[in-house]
Amino acid sequence: MRRAALTFGAWGLWVGAWALVLLIWGEATVPLIAFAAAAASAAVIAGYLALSPLESDPARTIGDTSFAPPLIGAGVVLTCNGLAFGLWLVLIGAELGAFGVGVLIAERRRARLR
View 1 (cartoon, rainbow, N blue to C red):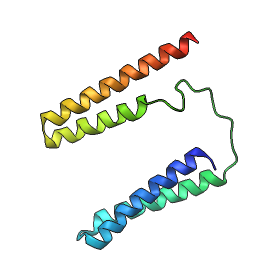
View 2 (cartoon, one colour):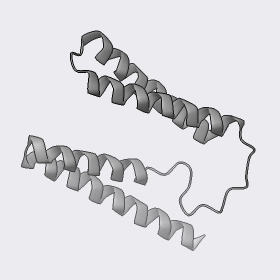
View 3 (cartoon, rainbow, N blue to C red):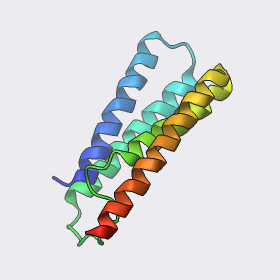
């Protein structure tokens, strides 16, 4: 199974679980429909990716086991959530994002030296 299909399938299951939680305990219909539609579309994309023929991947500039993208993503998410929860979370998110960018720069330098 391809990694992209697995990723979209896992995302679809995660969003589907949230849709199920909204179905059981939620009162609003619009979020339920939005989550269910997102879960269904992720499942369709995962099915398409699992059944489509494999294509050759281009050369990667970042390794498969890089910690930088998740760190940068978590930093962005925490910074955006900090807009609602306060400056303390903005600062934590900015610090985490900056650390992720530093890790990315170090990995790129290490790859260039090889």
